[in-house]
Length: 216
Length: 198
Image 1 (spheres, rainbow over the protein chains, first blue to last red):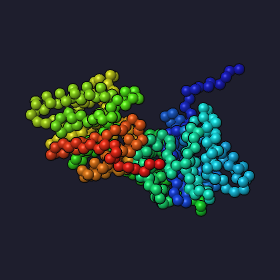
Image 2 (image 1 turned 90 degrees about the vertical axis):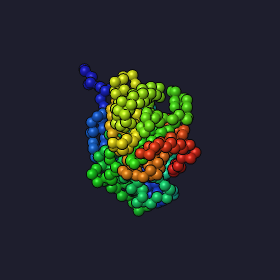
Image 3 (image 1 turned 135 degrees about the horizontal axis):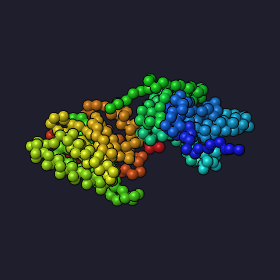
C-alpha cells in the first residue's frame, strides 16, 4: 500500500493575509473586513466574507489560517446556541468572546487563528473583544490581520470617543481601503456589518467604489 | 522612522533611537546628515554603514560642486548615494531618503532603498516604524501644503509611529529646507502631540 504524497511544502489557504477591524459606538458596533484568501502566492478566493455570525447580534472577524478560523467560529456558534437555550435569552458578547478565547488558549499550539468578536447585548451595549493568542480583552476598537500594520497610525489618529454610527462606518471603510491599498495580501471588496439594538445590517462595497486617497 | 515631504518647504524628520541588538545605545542621535548646504539625508538601517556612505557622498559632492562651480542638484546627491548603495549592495545594510532644494527643480525628495533603487516621490516614509503610518500618510497627505501644515503632518506621523514601533522613539528631529536656507526643529518626546490612547 502506498501512502499518498503528503507534502509539507503545500501552501494552505489562509486569511492571515487580511485586514479586519471592529469599532464600538454608543448603542452598537461596526465590524469590517477585506475579502482576500491566499494560499502562498495565489489568491484562492477574492470575495470571501470574513465576518461570521456567532449569534443574531454577535459577529466575529476571521484572520489567520482559514480552516482554523472557520472551525473555531462554527464551534462557538454551536456552543452559543446551546448556551442561549439554557439561559433562555440572547447571549452576552462577553460570553461569546470567552468561548472563543477558551478554544484559542487551550489549543494555542495547534491553532493559528485570531478572531475579533464584536456585537451588541442589552447589558453592556456595543462591545469589541480581542482574543489573540488566547487572551481576552475588551477595547474601544480593534484591528487585526497582516494589513492592520499599515493602519495603526491612521486608526490611532482618527479614533475619538463618542463617534456616531455613521462616523464609525466611515472609519471602518476608510481604514479598510487604506490597508487594502498598501497590503499586497489584502484586497477585493470590503464587507462591513453594523449591529445595534434594532438588528444587523450587512453591506458590501465593491473595490472600485472604495474611497481613494492620495496616490503618488 | 523617517517621513519626508517636498513642497515649497521640506521638513525632514526622524526619531533618534540607536540600537545594538535590543539595547538602546543612544536616544539622542541625529539621523539627518547634511551632505551639502541645502541637501540632507535621512538614514535607516545599520548606522555604521549609513555614516560611512554619507561621509563618502559628502566628499564626492563637495568635489563635484567645485568642479561645476555651482551647488549640486538634489538628484545628483541621490545618485551618488545610489551608486554607492548599488555597487556595494552585498555588504551594505543602509537605506536613505535624500531631500533638498536646488535652483533647477526646487524642492525634491528621493528614496534610495537598501538594494540601490532610486526613485523620486512627492513624499516618502521609511524605516521600521514606517509600516504603521502608511495608512495615515496616504490619508492625510495633500500636495501643496504650507510649511506649518507640513511640519504638523510630519510631527503627527512620527508621533503615531513612535507610539506603535518599539524601536522608534527619543527625540524628533526635523529640518526645513527652502530657497532661503535651512532650519532645524527639534521636538522632545514630552512635547509631541497626544492622540487617543486605548
